[in-house]
Length: 173
Image 1 (cartoon, rainbow, N blue to C red):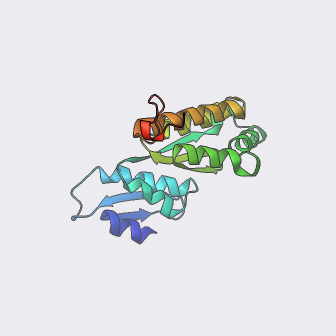
Image 2: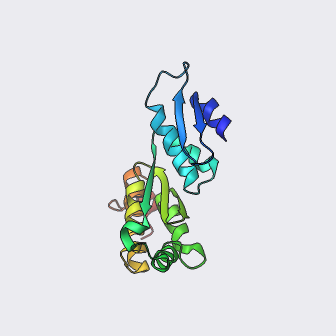
Image 3: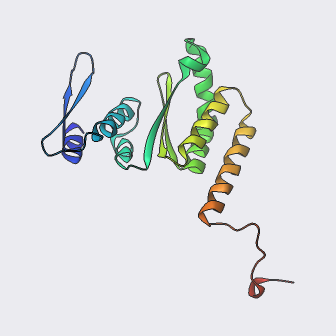
């Protein structure tokens, strides 16, 4: 993975094996300094439990990474964090799958964090859904929020039409 990142983004990664620190060094072939932030996000995503392939989505400028630290919201108690992680994942992964599907994001629940990768349009909705679960909202409330978000997204994209009657040729009077 290290060589793949270095080749794709024309950087050198210096990994300190004892501490796990990663230094990103631009090569002479890479004039764009902002690539450091992209590579840093990819490295963070891998460190937060994403597969390298999913983390590489962050190479697209329309995608971003959101990391929620559960310790900040429920405290250092392991049992509290486990309870909240269970709510986020849901029975048989239902909540996690629904959040990912309806917001077109990827989620990793790892350690004391929840990380999300998604396009900049959908990431705030996915983050809000996770935060609603952390704050103790009912799953049904969160699902209703997600379904409303998805309906609006489809409407904005022109995938569904609510306010117009069907054309004359399609009416079944």
